[in-house]
Figure 1 (cartoon, rainbow, N blue to C red):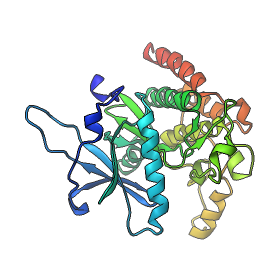
Figure 2: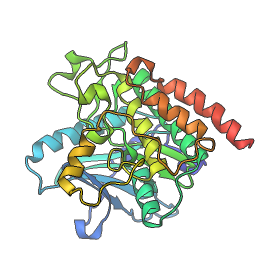
Figure 3: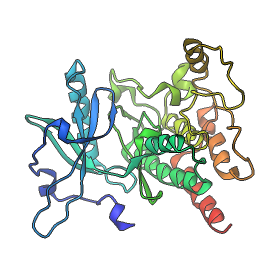
Length: 315
């Protein structure tokens, strides 16, 4: 398991390493976001060393204005440099020279990609143990962010959770839209300035969709929807799992129907046996309470997941 851990502190020489970035066609794409692409860089080995690959977040030059995304990438690099946690993707390098990039540790796959793969393979939903491992690792990452760093992630979803191996360890990534929190876990409007909650609508909490106070608990709601994704094998609010849609319902009407569901708790997928998924369903319901104060904290999620994993391991 040690091979998957984020180093507690990288050497200064590693963070200033000069690397050669080949042209984009020679890089494999790991993912993409608004205004950016994430590419994999296979680094040339040094004498007597095997060097791990990096994930490079680079500005998509076709998107205008690039300056907005450049500033966001710089801010993300500055933040990652300050963080050190086993469940948060590790910082590797940053350059704003000829080619602007943020270098991070590379992981196997995003949870979102894993869900897509299961859909293509017509596979079964993820197991309760796998789901509770996500809760454990993401709860730990969020507890660190919310309490030690006093930061709201702002875009929790399956595509921002990276998984190594068979859920050996999960790591939170993409810190481009974070917001500062005060000592009470509320967004610090003075420090945030003009910055507002960004997020992704389908995963957004009701206080974001309908207007309300954004707090650390706003990160907890979408984590609950990630558990739903792992059961339904679909992004939240893109399918009604309790009924068959009318075949004559056109695409535009379908999109309007489901967008009206944003900020609500999706129904339990029809294929899920409640007794088998009792533990993750309990966490799912707790995380998706409409009242933020009733949602668990990251620390509560860690404690609950630890106990539930012990129970599941003994079954």
